[in-house]
View (tube, rainbow, N blue to C red):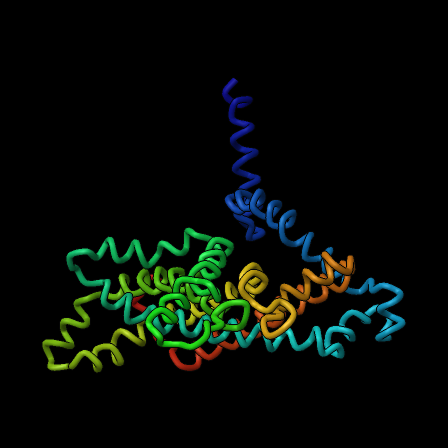
Length: 308
């Protein structure tokens, strides 16, 4: 009886031993459900989209040539589509840079204890709950030609005619800052909270001023967090869609890549071209991400005291 009862245990131990000899940890099997979900939700749609890009329509091949790569030829040779890369970068880069740079001093101040800190923090992160559509609606109400801002300025005689603050580049930029700043602020605050305050206290004891403490201690430790925050806010801004359509100039100066993909998909029923634009959109984002992370590794190679 005892010999029969020990067989399953011996078999399991033997299997584990054989897997361990081959460098396979059975615990890795726990990753299997996650891999299945990743394949179903990301790998397969991504591969399907890539496959669509090399299935151009007959009209596209006839107009641009290039055979199965006619969509890529059209993307690079059609100025109306290719210029959307620059128009999107023109929005995403300044918005991401502003959100990161503006978040640093605010997060530095709010890491200290003072009365009203929680209320102020809540007000700063509140826009992240509004969503881009509600933010765009608020911008149209407050900053439109008949909005409160223009009405107040006209009432006090500060302007002769309403300012054009929406339905152009400024409208989309305002929207990106309103929705992106809370995101950047929360990330920067998290990284700052991971820096040991005793380091700054020790430097202060040795006579270092606030600028020296910031430049020699805080900034190097915060550098990885700044790079990560910039990357995430840039990707968020680069994929802007509702704001570019609701408070921008959809076919003009805010003709971003996502709008071009939507135009090909929803208006022209050209799924192959829409997939090509979406793929090029991801490629541009990847290039910027690699450049930022590479620059970070060149400028700073030390350890970080932050939580990132």
